[in-house]
Amino acid sequence: MAEQALWTRARLGRCGPPLDLLTANFRRHVYAPHAHEEYTVGVCVGGSEVIDYRGGHIRTGPGTIVVLEAGEMHTGGPGTPTDGYAYRALYAEPSLLADGSLGGLPHFREPVVDDPELAAALRLAHTELSACPDPLEAESRLPWLLTALAHRHSTARSAPALIPGAGSIALTVRDRLADELTAPPTLSSLAADLGLSRYQLLRAFRTTMGIPPYAWLAQYRVTRARALLASGLRPAEVAPLVGFADQAHLTRWFRRVLGVTPAAYRNSVQDSRR
Image (tube, rainbow, N blue to C red; front, side, top):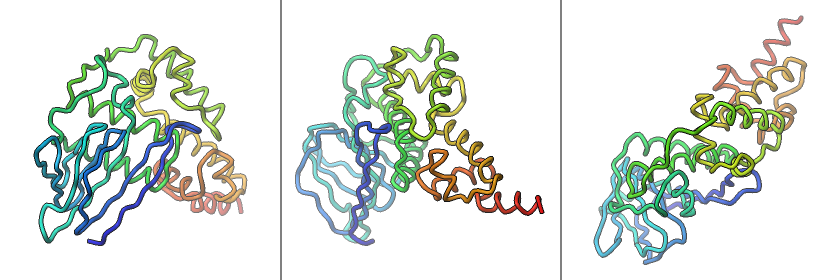
């Protein structure tokens, strides 16, 4: 295992606040005692790490989630002399974990969390956002997962799950996203316009539409891209016209929705016209 630490900065919505993502693979590295202003939420993906925290030692293993609270001193190093350790971490402002909860900032009595489903979701979101930190996707996925973490494993009490007028809220958000597909508004600004928290907006949208806002918008963009590809435009030309970051971003979603690449779709449509 090579010594490697890669940082990616995602934004929670266009022009929104930053959130840092760390992909770490270490064999021997030992952290000096330090603390962060944010909550550190990590998922161990290989090996084992030993962390000095709150006067004791905690040990991670593959699939475990570690939550280190803001301002708390800690270290980190390999759990064995041979295996090293690898993890994916994000550094979240405390308010992100408090959204959707009652009673102030959540407190995690146990820093090591065993929740395979949530660990897998955090790891997948981290991997995909590190590769393509789309702002709307980051704002849709990360606050939702962090709220789930707080609800399931902290002292925080969950806010009421029922959002009055959820259907109307979702349709309003859907229409705004469709109208501004190349530069969508932040979910926090949409929520403020509707007198909601971002968590309430996300819950209303997911309850009504069955998918989060970024996924709905990506599918809408694919529909628009399909028509442009059929008209003869190349994938590299189409991607920015419908709001994707680049051709790779378009290709990822086009394959998810339609099962083929944009280039393959364009070629098949063009061939059928000859």
